[in-house]
Image 1 (cartoon, helix red, strand yellow):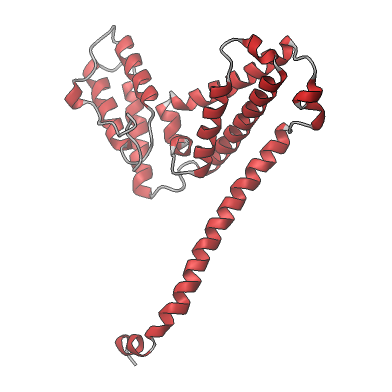
Image 2 (cartoon, helix red, strand yellow; image 1 turned 90 degrees about the horizontal axis):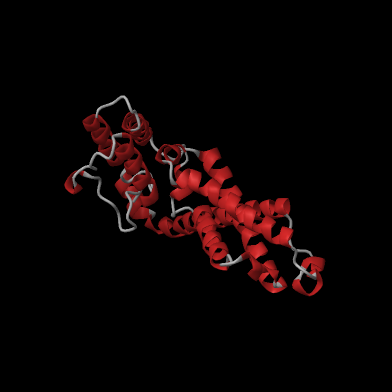
Length: 245
């Protein structure tokens, strides 16, 4: 019996097999969600949770040291994040840090938005126990989300990319090194920068802050030389930066 005859005789097998395939895909999604929740929970255990004795009603007076400590923790996470946000070469090594298709990346940015929104305009505002505990919880969640995202990004690196894509990332990193090379000419640095950004299009989400910082460094090192003409600069996506589709 050839393939056409088999398909004609046993076409009905598509139904049970399609059910098995759909069930398998759903099972993988559920497993990935559980793995992400477990990773976040383990990180929260590492940082500790607010115990009943630390809730607003039992907290008592919030000291200046308490306020300084939690603001410093928030600043520390922000500095760690900006070390990626402003460094294109680092993002090439750890592209997951800005890939919003990844659930852990979304978790971090959601936690960051929440903690940033609760940050007081003046430290004295945190002397109120309710505000202090709400802010401290948000900062703890932010630190947890960042630790989990960074750990997964460093574990994964570029393993999800094809050989061709990894080669493009390698070229982009070499071009960025040339763009940062003070010994190179103005034309060489500008050309290398533009070519690097083209190599990264569709592969790595590069925040606008990172491209702006690099352009300022190049212009500053060249004594204020003008940036590339607008029609020669890499196109930006809807969010203002070249990124992976």
